[in-house]
Length: 280
Image 1 (tube, rainbow, N blue to C red):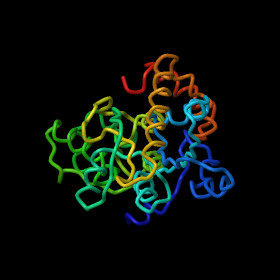
Image 2 (cartoon, one colour; image 1 turned 135 degrees about the vertical axis):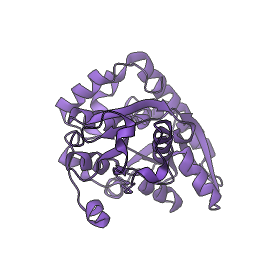
Image 3 (tube, rainbow, N blue to C red; image 1 turned 60 degrees about the vertical axis):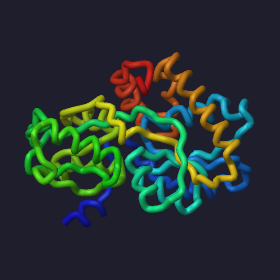
Image 4 (cartoon, rainbow, N blue to C red; image 1 turned 180 degrees about the horizontal axis):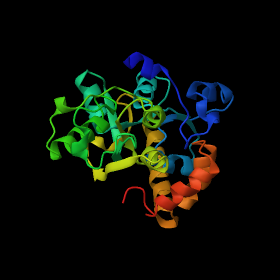
């Protein structure tokens, strides 16, 4: 049954059907450009400073040309890095520690406060985390999402075995499965949680910063591009500062053109993201 669930793909109300273009296709389309760094990102708020730094010319001013390769799951993002398809990727601290324990030689820069939410399907009428007893909660294993989920269940008096955890790596599919009545709840990054809430689903817990869920920029420890990565970190910090100072509307075009979100949904998302800083 789980294989059937994972194999079915739906388009969430917050995601355009044009967003299916793979990172590999994007890479092939730009083979003629000499990139200094290939950067794998996820469709989360934490990636916005990278997109903005490229769009606003910050990368150019620092003398670095980057190719942004979007992935919809942490697993695919990680695999691209481990297979040398990219130079840098976004990765949460729990996953980073997991790969280190497996013998991978990886280094990291930045620790970004990453906000997850535990979202219940509107079809189960859950009002609190404790209501998820004996329900299915979609997440990815060995990840910050799993750490966040188990912490919240424990705080609600539930044991790990009191719920069921189908592994759904694709972030948009995880949100879609709430709408399509395939899971009872899901652990979602802030952006996907907002989209799920717009679909009428219930956010049971959010805005909890968990150390193991913090996102990092990760690269091979033996990378020959340390100087370029340092410039990328600087570009990220400058992009983040610009967004914090000028507010989320600065990213409206990124949501539409890079994240492929419908205009109407973007306007609703920006209203929800009332805070001017994504890591506040």
